[in-house]
Every structure is written in structure tokens, then in C-alpha cells.
Length: 428
Ligand code: NAP
Image (cartoon, rainbow, N blue to C red; front, side, top):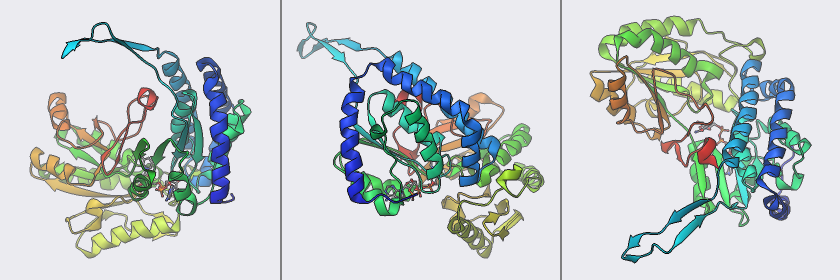
């Protein structure tokens, strides 16, 4: 895919600005119709798009197909949400004097040009979840897909043009973010930025963006807290699915396991057994553990494992590497001096930390620069809810793995995991 020059970026933005005025003048229904046709085409072409996603970003066909279909549903859900939102009126009241003869009419108007920057790991869903609410509400979208993921992003856009969208209204700006990103994020025509990706890039964007609204969905270090003997088996099952699927290249993969001391032996034994059963190989063979997206990513994850082993950690399983394939690895005897304690691997390695009591479990979960999600495994729902209130994250899952979705629910991070909320209604 070719790299846009800063001059070409400027031209595309000027054209999008002109197209947005016409798009915003359409009725809500006319805009929603185009997006509904897009959802239909995504369903029709689900196999073709899923094959492209599988080949481009190395996830299994089944996962890629689910990603396409959930995105089609999300477009329809967003349309319905938007079409049901009506003008709000508010009566005035007594505030220092009698304002009861005043009334406000609250109307939603488009912002203008929304810059949508998506990451490589969900090139369809994390693009559509930005594009669909921005377009239906009358904005233009400047779509910057991840370089690894740009072919899938381009097909998503082509289907939207086929559904009837003016190409100028949503240019696909390709090129490496490190080269063309600053020209985009600091451009005066941009009215909002919705970014999903790493914390370093998100923070860089927020420094350049100036006074435009930002939604930043960034990295995570999600913890699973196992606090009850009755939930050990279920927790191990969920952690293996949530911590290792797609080689853990998910923002909400479980990236730390925090377990009460007396439950540690059962958790360690269960994990060693189940992680040992994971299939390792190619996404085309439906393997759970697949090569990481790049050699650089594999080097980074291997570096985290080596650093921990050199500082005294032990591998309950895994620890090795072949090309970009990192063996599924569970590390124990972890200390705060090890990089794996704080850093996000984005690869299949999970440390286990054992703690004396619930209080220490909460403190350990919160001892992180990140705050995306957390899982609590406990059979007493009241206790689980009480603990959830003390965890510094955007969402807590009780007796289930951390994950984004269903897409209509609010999704957000705190601390270095981001700010702003995505999901059906909040995105609108
Ligand atoms: P990334 O390297 O930060 O890239 C994300 C996007 O930003 C890509 O489109 C990238 O383009 C672009 N970019 C890079 N530098 C830029 C710049 N200076 N200005 C503007 N855009 C720039 O992240 P990734 O490796 O694709 O994804 C993995 C990270 O995303 C992990 O940290 C993960 O936790 C996070 N993530 C978070 C969520 C969430 O919802 N919280 C969801 C998924 C992933 P290029 O590809 O061309 O570099």
C-alpha cells in the first residue's frame, strides 16, 4: 500500500470537508440506509474478508469471521440507537432568580471531520466501531488503518463505497503512522480523534492534537483475581481462553494472574496442564498460539521472558521461541524488579502472583500504570461486587474472562489505558 505524503493528506481532508456538508444535510434515515447496506455487504462477503484478515494479521478464519459478523451487527445497532434519539427539551428553574419561563432545546450536530486510527489486531471491528457512529451522525471520517491491517481496512472501505458512500467522505489514508501520523493528528481541519493502539502512540497523539475531543483506547495489563477455591477450575478455563487466544494479541488479554496463597498449587497445576494442551502453529490450521505480528514483537516478548528468568522467575511451561512463534508461557516467582510485572507483553506470556489475602490482591491489581479491565473469580457475588468497587479499571468481569464486547456495552480504560468511552450509545 502506498504512503500518503503530507500534501496528499491535506487535499484529502479538504475534499472530505466539502463532502461532509452534503452528507450532514441528508436525513438521518438516508445516512442510516447507506450504513445498513454496508452491514449487508459485510455479511455477504464475510468469508472473503475473513480470509484476508487471517492472511494479513494472522488470526484464525473462525475468529476473523466472527469479527466481521459482530461488526455488521454493531453497524445496525448503532443505526437503531441513533434513529431513536430525539430532540431533548429541558425546562428552566429557580437559580438565583426565576428562570421558569426559559426552556432549552438540546440538538446533536456533527463535529465535522473525525480521524479514526485503528490498530492491527482487529482491523475490521476496531475500524467499524469508530466509522459507523461517526458517519451516521453526519461526520466525515478520515480513516487511518494500521499498516499491518491496511488491506483489510481497504476492503472494509470498498464495501462502504459499494453501499453508496461518496469516496471523498471517507478517504483511507495509508502509510506508516510514524511517518504520516503527525501531519494527520495536528491538521487544523480535524475536529475529533478516535484512536485505538499502544499507550506510547496514544500519549504522543494527545500532545499534538490540541483542543479537539479525543477518545483514546490504549494498552492494558488486565489481572485475573482468583479468590475462591470453588472457582479455581472455572477460572483456569477462562484464563487459558482469555490469556492465550490469538497469542494474547488483544488489549483485554489476561496479562497477570493474582491468586490467594492457598489456591496457588491448584491454579499452577491446572494452568500447566491446560496451557500445555494449547495448539501451536498456523492460523490456517486453526491454532490458538500463532506467530506474533512481527519479528520486533516476538523480540520484545522474548526479552520480557528472558529478563524475568534472569532475575529469578521460573517458567511453569513454555519459555521458548521459534521464529515469531513464542511458546505459551506461564511465569512464577515474580518480583517487581522484573519488567513483566508492569509491562504489557502483547504475546502469550502470563505471570502468576500469589498474595496473602483479598486486600493484598486488590493492592496488587491496582499496582499497575494501566486500568483497562479485571476479572474476579468468586462464588459469592456480593463479595465480588464489593471487591470490584476497589479495582481501578474501566470494567470488571465477574466469573468471566476479560474481553471487549458485546459491542453495545460501554468500553473504556482509565489510567494509561485511555479515556473516553466506546460502545453503542456512548459512541454516538
Ligand atoms: P500502535 O503501534 O500504537 O498503532 C496503532 C495505530 O496508530 C496504527 O494505525 C499506527 O499506524 C498508528 N500510529 C503509529 N504512530 C502514529 C503517530 N505518530 N500518529 C498517528 N498514528 C500513529 O498499536 P498496535 O501495535 O497496532 O496495537 C497494539 C496496541 O494496541 C497494544 O498496546 C494494545 O493493548 C492496544 N489496543 C488497545 C485496545 C483498546 O481498546 N484499549 C484495543 C486493541 C489494541 P502504523 O500501523 O502505520 O504504525
